Length: 254
Image 1 (cartoon, rainbow, N blue to C red):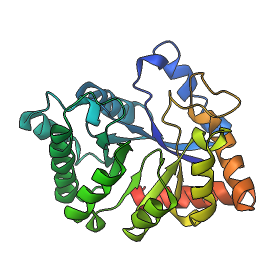
Image 2: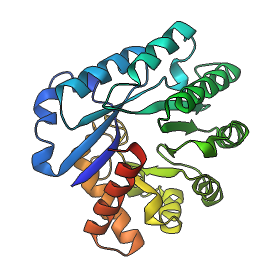
Image 3: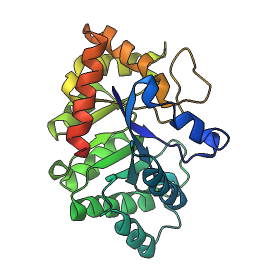
């Protein structure tokens, strides 16, 4: 059974068929899902999903594109969710210089602040980093993030950066991009990294794998990701599914 470590079923893209879709997951081999908060409302909706579906767990955090109006009162609200049994991580948090919606210093401030929340609660972190390779790694080193646990979501950087993160004890999140013809760099990282450091994720509704590229993504498509990883690593599909599931269970303590 597949462990989906990063999806956004609170997203409006699922408003018309969310319940119907989620109820099919187990029958199609999806055992557990981490639904990841990105905004404060997304966190609230994530908590609600964890209460409704036994196989859905949650991550609470504010995406770097959403930190502009974040306050310490909001942080208190996030903290209030962390003691719930099915809240498994702080995330997604980090830096995004691609969309560049928020001032870089503001992004850095709240990245550090949310890492502090992870230190306080003992929860792992789910790190979003896009076009911000150096700053993300520098901040994580400065903040001794090697004392935390976590995953670099939607990993998109070099083998050298991957080595740095794995040396810190972090997992690499691998999703639909690994199936793309132009996903050469991620393929190289997957070939290089031990399977014990990889997690399966979709980022649904985004980044659907081939042959669904450009369409709405969902956890059912993780089979394509796992098959691609199996081909790259030269191991059976079942080995990829089982190992990544065990990795996720270890990280999120589920």
